[in-house]
Image (cartoon, rainbow, N blue to C red; front, side):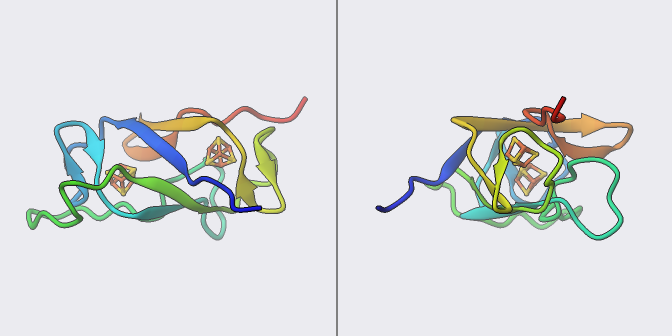
Length: 99
Ligand code: SF4
Ligand code: SF4
């Protein structure tokens, strides 16, 4: 069965190259990285050059945050996610720690 990509409905990290009008425009982000304590957007790119595809609504390609309730086999199973700044870095705001 083909799985629909989890969409990023909003991202307020406006200094990211892939952000335009508070939306992400790269095909797929990766969430979490080596040594991360937060559910970081690992695709974040700080730069003046804008990239991505304007017609594309970004999605979650892979997520390495196993401790999130929505993570299954290192994939995101949330309906959709939002991303925002937390302590100066971009985080998945839909992250929910397992209880
Ligand atoms: S979700 Fe990540 S890659 Fe996309 S605009 Fe936000 S910070 Fe940039
Ligand atoms: S909701 Fe959880 S599993 Fe989905 S991208 Fe965010 S941290 Fe990863």
